[in-house]
Image (cartoon, rainbow, N blue to C red):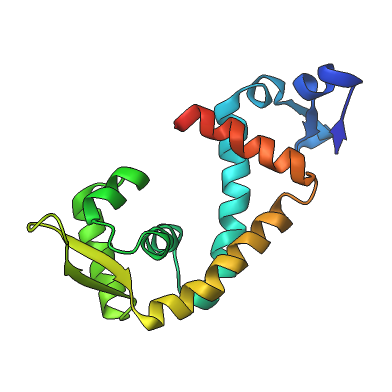
Length: 165
């Protein structure tokens, strides 16, 4: 159960009764709840759990989805550009691409301007998969942020992007 005060003080001083605690001792998490990183992590964990549940039908992990989405919206993108955008190490992308290749979701074509690079695009199967998975991802985020209106959700995204972009 949450105990709150009025206004901004409530956000800083929430306490929660510890589950299973003898005498129902309150846990003061107010300091942690005042930290951006703590709140971003808690929100991320919540959304990630829902993401994994909803993407299970597509057999997609979050990084698989992100890579396929970048390829879908940037046909011909290079592996280097994907690594840069998603902050991935190249060896990790190589393993991921092997899995996507096995599922026949992506194809590689010579890059038009860089003879050393391959351009990546979705196969028809990859396009079919992502045409279903992306709307499911949008819906899960709407569901996960149901307590926010559209303006608040857009503001939250803008504020988070100001931290990492």
